[in-house]
Length: 198
Length: 107
Image 1: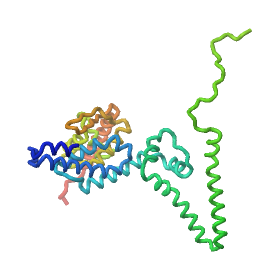
Image 2: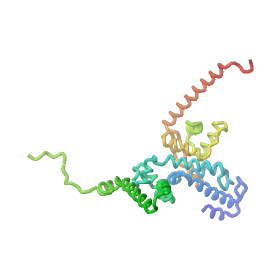
Image 3: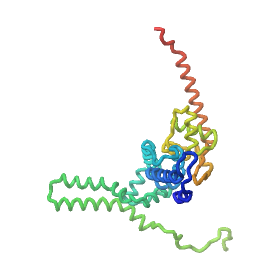
Image 4: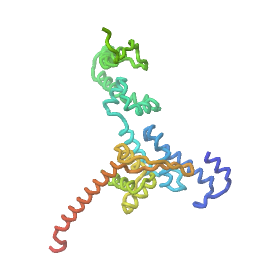
């Protein structure tokens, strides 16, 4: 929209810079895109809350003719964004249980959970947590010089045993304490202020 | 508390400021020695807000540009005052140590 407004004003020039309004508008749009690209280092919920504000601060710092953030600022945003991701994530123990066993983190981490499930790299994050276990399994089968079918059988049984053992608690919760919005069956109402019948 | 965080709190103690205002105030207060980048500034602001030492006090939109102002809370002012007292005591001790040294160039 800023670009359309600039076009409507034609060849007008900015008295501060002496440059055409069109050029200044293009510079600004380009600068905004550059900032927002580097802001992707921050968690999604942080960007929703802060991105507009940070774009303005960086635009003020860079001056009117900047078309992209400089290298030092970009690295600063990258480092600060990764630090923010680390600071805003649940404890590693909670993440491990969520990634490896599918246990839901507590409601205190719902914002993080939304970001994780909505993020385009969800599958990559899941795989990254499981990859070390798969790699260890492959390494064990490579080291053991037995017949291939026996190695495969033992690996499958071991994997099944570990998976079922770890998944037991989740099944117990699912079967006996299923998540539900319903309050359940109501018992008859009994007033507390009535005299007992004699 | 880091020196940068101290300067940010000092800038907010003067008056509510937006991000760019904080950067300029820190530059002035530090005699042009501390130049905050946006990443560092918002890392510090995040931590101050999380610790309830600072809070967003309002927003102004000028020419479609958002400026969010931050101010120090009473708790933050207390922490800043305590840190300033600590620095003052440190400076006094440092001056005592330096004052007790024999004059250089006498040997």
